[in-house]
Image 1 (spheres, rainbow, N blue to C red):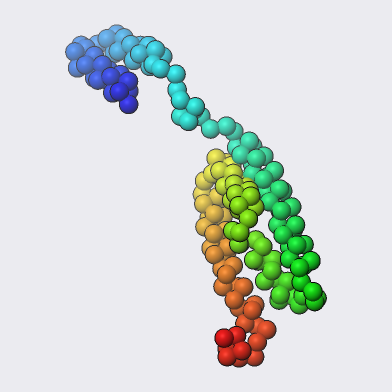
Image 2: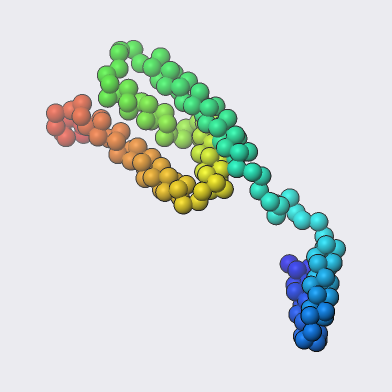
Length: 162
């Protein structure tokens, strides 16, 4: 912040004191470029982002890993049940395995995968990715509601649920 402020004030001082001919303006621009080049090296956090294919690659790999982890979670759920699951119970279990945050490694991997895929999309085409992001988060927010509706389907009245 201090270095940038110094550069801006020195540029403003040169512009104010410079005469109106073009040679003086070119000198001011050259001085600004020299001052900018002499500045301290840029922090790693302020560097340019890598190309979008890097974000898509990392997101794709993490998505494959999180899909594998989700399948393992569903298999564990099936193995723990003694009776055969109905379709609605299986769907509820699959939804629960996808949206529950009980396993930190699964949660971090799945969230990171989605984040990297969206990052690559934002770098490629912001408008379409924004629409996809809003749609994705709207659909995933209905997970718990869908789980409750599927559970309610197994009962004849609300008094049986309570």
